[in-house]
Length: 180
Image (cartoon, rainbow, N blue to C red; front, top):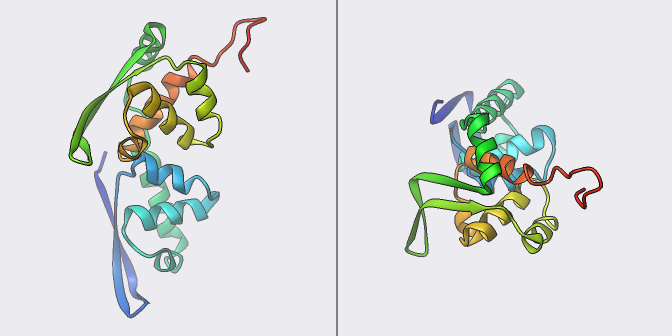
C-alpha cells in the first residue's frame, strides 16, 4: 500500500493569505477516522483530508470532486485489513489478540509498541456503546489493552478496524442468549 498520496491542484488555491498547490495525504489514524465518521459522504472524506493533510478544510472544499474521490479511494485502501480471516477467527476463539505498532505510538513520553487485547467484559462493552462508529472500537481497545484513549487514537486505522472485527466476533449470540 502506498504510504502517501500527493494531489497537485491544477491551479493554486488561496485561503487566509496563504497559497496551496497540493495536499499530501498519509494513512489516517484511528482518531482522525473516528472524527471524520461524524460527517457522512464526501463531507467526511473532506474532513479526513483536512486532518491527515494538515490543510484547512476550506481549501479541501475548493478541490475538484475527482480529487476528493481519489483521496477517498486512497483512504479506503489504507483502511484495508491485512490480517488473514483465519488468524482473526483464532484470536476470537482464544479471546486474545495483539496489535503490533510499527512505529510505536508515543504519548506523554511512554512508548506503546504492542497492544494486547482481550475479550471485553460487560462494563467495557457498555462504555463502548456510548460511542458511535470507530470511536466505540477505540474505547474497547483502550479498556482491554489498558492504554489511554489518546494513544489508541494515534494507531493506524487498519489496525483499529482489525480490532473491531475481533471485538465484533464476541457479539454474535447463541439462540436464546443475551446478545443483541
